[in-house]
Structure formats: C-alpha cells, structure tokens
Image (tube, rainbow, N blue to C red; front, side, top):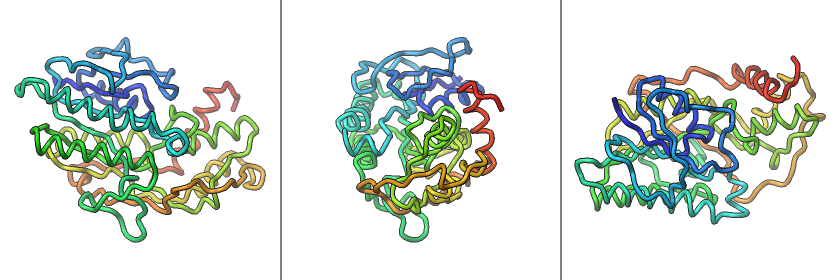
Length: 312
C-alpha cells in the first residue's frame, strides 16, 4: 500500500484528492493548518488508512517514515488576496515548499519521498494564441502566480543539486461543490441565492479553462501512478469559457436575467486575458475529463441550496 502525505487535504481540491486516494486504496496522512478556506463539511476520520495532522507546512518539523509521496496542495490561492496582502502567499507558497524540500533532503536517501507538487496554469501568464505546453517559459503576472512559479524554481533547483525526486502538475481553473465562496462560481451561486448581485471584474471577457475538481484529481492520480519522475504535466479540460460566460451559465440555470444578477466593477491589476494549456501529455497516460461546466452547474446549484437549507 502506497503512503501519501497530502498537504492541504482539507482545502477544496485537496479534499477531493484525499477522498479519491482513499477510495483507490492509498494510505493518506493529511496535513492541514485549517485556514479560513478549509472545508468543514468533510470528515475523513472514520475512513480506513487515514490520519490527520494539524500543522503548517512552513513550520512542520518532520515527514513520517515510509511516505512514498508528499502531495503538496497547501497554498494561498485567491489572486485578489495576493494583490492586497501577499505576505501569507510568500510564507505558504514559497516558504512552505522550501521547508518541504529541506525536510525531504534531511531524510535518509532510502526513505526520501517523491515531491508531487500541485501548481497552476497561471504560471505561464497570458496565452495570446494557442495553448502552452510544459516546455514553455513561465511568465507569471500577478503575485499569486509569481509565488507558484518561484516554488517550481525551488523544486527544480533542489532536484538538480540535491537529487530530490519530484513531479509537478499545473492545473487549470477548478470548480465543484465545497469551494470557498471567494472563487467565481461558488461566489456567484451564493450571492444569487442570497439576493445579491454578482460582481464581475471589468467586462468579464478574459478566458479561462474550467475543470471539475474530481476530474482534475483523477488526472493527478493518473500522473502520480503512471507519470515520469522529473516531469511537468498540464492538467486541463480544454473547455474554454470567458468569466462572463461562466457567470451567465449560473444566471440562466437559476432562471434570472443578467441585468438583475450581475454588476461590473473595475478590473483588478495584473489581469491575464487568457489561460490555455495543452494537456496531451497527461491524456497520453489514459486520463480524460468526464464532466462539462454546463452539465455540472444545475447540480452545483442544487447542492448549494441543500447546504443553505433552501427548498427546491
């Protein structure tokens, strides 16, 4: 049985990954410091082959023996927060990765886990045409993506100098129930269900790729099980929608008119116009996403109503 130490396993994407890994027969040690965005609606404590450690990756002092992979989800990830208060992003996204690398380096070489690091498509910056491949340059354009790119450079440096084994995955925009309502779709649904208008930066025409969190985690597990050490893998759906179009899908599914549901606010600084990545490398491992955004939104709304106690 493979043993995974998953950091940030109570976060949105991390919790989907922990659930899937346990179902697949992995032993999971979940390390999470329970930030404001940690999920309170999941409970893995009764599951077999699971243990939880409440700890911050930037200050944790050891990695237990026998761990095969450190799967690092732990990160500050909300771009707006990174613009206005970025110290936490430096501490977690850079300092935390540095600490993990040093903890791995300190272990006997026979007991060193592979670092399986979760990054983001935002490290590439704006895709003006076509889709980025894993070999393209990193040109991050906001403080969040800059910290994620910096973490990747640390990993490459420690791998080359100290022989740390690592795999990096760069995922596109995730969605799904359990996402903290600072993120676009969760915020849209929660605002509209509570009688508020959704705020959209600028005209909302900037493009993103969207992937259901469970599909993303299936892709991550495919890379973990079949991917090659030392490689980078893009994980995406190829499903591209503007932010405004994604919001419209929610508005229409709720039977509302756009003018009654949306208000435009000034664009945020550092806004990338388009993210798009080529994930043929991950798909070559036999993985493919199954869910589309339009298919999932009615279920997303239903689950949110259930959470808020709103009758159908």
